[in-house]
Length: 543
Image (cartoon, rainbow, N blue to C red; front, side, top):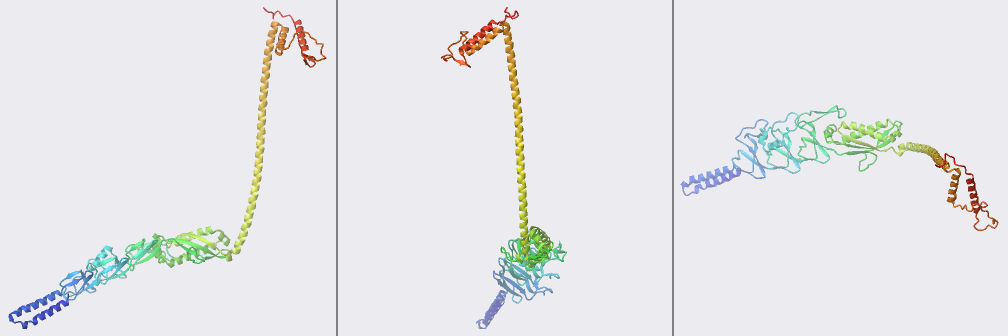
């Protein structure tokens, strides 16, 4: 309560003492004087009481009855005179006499969501020569040191000046006489982006990256605890980073396209066409699109060599692509350049990859759009067009000639095949005829042989019969067989019809001779044959 309590107590004590002369009895005066002293003592006692509200912190300054601070020290940690490191928590506190102590209250430190608190200490171990920020400590230890200033200044070994760590969102009861807190936005890394930190804390970098930038044989990257561009990157997300201790460089990892053309296309900014000059003296513009990307692992190299994903990178890419295309064009004629677009794309892509890889930039592809214009290559292209037309006509004529030759050859082949087919058919027919001839000859021979055998058999049979009955009898028997088989009437034996002239009925004729005449003739012949019958030899006579 401080001085007001003493003043009130003193006033009350004086008021009580002023009533002593008016007392009716002198015996009461010591009692009243004692009461006045008690009131004064109560006032003095109450003056040592301090109250700290719940939303504030008590800052104590010792004004007397203490040792002086050591040279260079600002905050007392062992009851020296001066601002005390310890703070008063909310509530009632006693024995903080007004003359000896001064107690002030301050608001609690509140770090809003989406922000971080940057801390600067007014006391602590001095920074080393060239050191800008205090040494980095673990987040848990840093939080403990800031909440307990005495620990920070003693066993914690905190350094004076800007701190590397930050306070995360929350409410802190901090000795604001020791620590000055400033709120700044937290570090948010968007998608398709990484954050590369350039540390202002620590010793010199030790990781060497060979052959990166022009005029530099190598660059150095920093590990944790070292000063410089850090090798580790921050992926998309939110981070409590001290942007003063760590410079944050945002690097896009998305594929980007640089449009080197005279006009914008597909939402791409026009960066101007690349003008090249061919070996035969033609100067003409070339529209080029370059797709490139910075991969996460290469982002520190880009920051170390180019300072980040900035205009310097775009200027470098433009310089390299223009130089490569101009150098390639000087080696070929204009017409060959137009006709070898894919080859130029391949060569340029590889050359640009080799150049930009040194800086940590990955070139995905190089595409050539329009080559030349009507003004620069119109006459040349027209000549080429006429030449192509003539060449195509010549090719067409040659193709027609080849087609005619092929058709002629085809007809000749078809004709030869037809002739071969006919020859084959004739050959087969000859073979068939020969086989049929041989077949007929074999059949005739077989038939003749059969007739011969039959005739011989019949002859033998007739001979045997003739030997038994005589040739005449045998002839008569055979003749009678014929007569019987043909139904010839041989009775009467001799008959001559006189009535021939009328052509009577029943008188058939054959070649001018009637059937009756034939029968008579046959009968006569038989009689003659019987009359001439030779005697049967004794060998053939019947037994």
